[in-house]
Amino acid sequence: MVTDDRPAAPTATAKSGMDDNGQWWRDAVVYQIYPRSFADSDGDGIGDLRGISDRLDRLVDLGVDCIWLSPFYVSPGADAGYDVADYRDVDPMFGTLHDFDTLLAKAHRLGLRVIVDLVPNHTSTAHPWFQEALAAPPGSPERSRFHFRDGRGADGSEPPNNWPSAFFGPAWTRTTDPDGKPGQWYLHMFDSGQPDWNWDNEEVREEFRSILRFWLDRGVDGFRVDCATALVKAPGLPDVPENPDDYDFFAAVRGLDGQDLPPSPGGDQEGVHDIYRDWRSVLDEYGADRILTGEIWLPPRQISRYLRPDEMHQAFNFAYLEAGWSADRVHRVVRATLAAHDEAGAAATWVLSNHDVVRHATRFGFGPDAPRMFGIRATDPQPDTALGLRRARAATLSMLALPGSAYLYQGEELGLPEHTTLNDEARQDPAWRRSGGTQAGRDGCRIPLPWEADRPAAGFSPGGKTWLPQPSAYARLARDRQQETAGSTLEMYRQALGIRKARHLGHGKLDWLSEPADAVVALRNGDLLSVTNMGNVPVGLPPGDVVLRSEPGPDTVLEPDTTAWILSRPTA
Ligand code: TEU
Image (cartoon, rainbow, N blue to C red; front, side, top):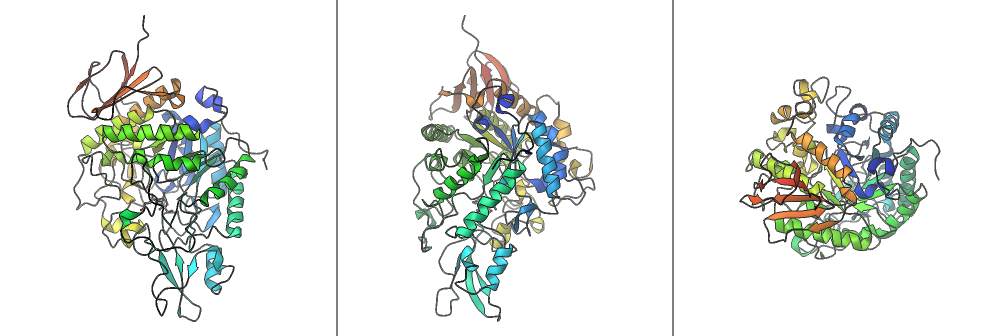
């Protein structure tokens, strides 16, 4: 079904200046908005949809092509909105459906595409179907939409299998029957407030087709699919090996350069591909320009199975995010990525930060072997923030020179660091609580953005409230301080995105000028040369015009921890 009143989406040719046959995503720069921390319009200290609408022009100015909105749906907030109680409405905290329509129409008017988060692996315990399941007996159709099981042991007091939750502790919670006696258990790969759907159930499948249509009818350009590998589990839900190194339960990246991971009973099962083929046919009813982007924590070669022509359009490249400050690993990941995607006929993607990982300006402030992926507390070793920012800027330029699509996380264009000294009392991530306080969790990368240095809450909220406290460093990094300030991180991003677009780098072809054993990552994309010095000593730069660099310096020398973009001079 195609609706006539869809807010006009930007045309591909208008965006890129090239004919990409409408496949706008192949070179798109996508900016991730984490709604509760982007901008607050009503003063409650939590970002909202009107706050986003009001500031979309800044993103146009930055030069991105598309925004991805993390969940804004009705939710009790057990996992910051990734526990969805109503997939078809906006949580009052964020506004209304009308606010969403206004945002979408404005974004399209400004030439920005909009993709929304879809959370199909699990729902919320507050979802009406889960409440019905709790009220229904074991074996009922209501319970078969989820994974309810009897417990093990004589009295059923042991979880049905040994699966751990991604947020620590068991992946099962026991229910209480209406008579007050302990009942069956339900599966939740994440928080106990996030029961997993049973994708063998046809009603669940039909419900999600309908949810896709609901947002496609409103005019969205696509979906970021949460936990895309996890929907289908191995039949019988078998135990996992005792040693977590013997399998890959959450399909996170263990092998950086494409070696196969042992199969996990909790995800990446063959049956999941049928779901994406089915969804692809729903999207294709709306034309060829609506996309699926998978959150897939797998190495490139395994990701490409999700990118077959009748499945998803693209997937996040977490192997790249995890490559760290290592020329060797960057070479290997980029090569593996391009080879796997070329074979699948899909465009590669690149990403350095998101709402689940320590911001890259902080990750790079540790040694290469300390990726610091799951939060940092005040009592942990602290990063070298200057080094972190220097390397983050260099890494960003290196990333933006690559062909394909790039994902940016809000605030990275300001060089924001992680909040590494957040008070434990302020922490909200369920992983913090469920780990018994041994893991800081992800709050430190979700801090409200600084917009204007001299206003309360650095301009995030009119009343000065923020749902998580901002670190003192944020005010001086506020957008208004960086706007039109030569050499600021914001200006560097703006220039890089401008050059990337003007020279069609996203559609380019990569030639290597360096080897994995080198200390530099040097590559050519069209007539642009990008050289990143990941070693300890300065290196000479090839001749040409330096059009952008991550730190100031002479045209002939590249200092450690910096990147230069050079345009080759035409040969006479
Ligand atoms: O994340 C899925 C995921 O596996 C990780 O990024 C996760 O945060 C980490 O591994 C914890 O161990 C997605 C969302 O991006 C994340 O914010 C949600 O919390 C999660 O799904 C559950 O919906």
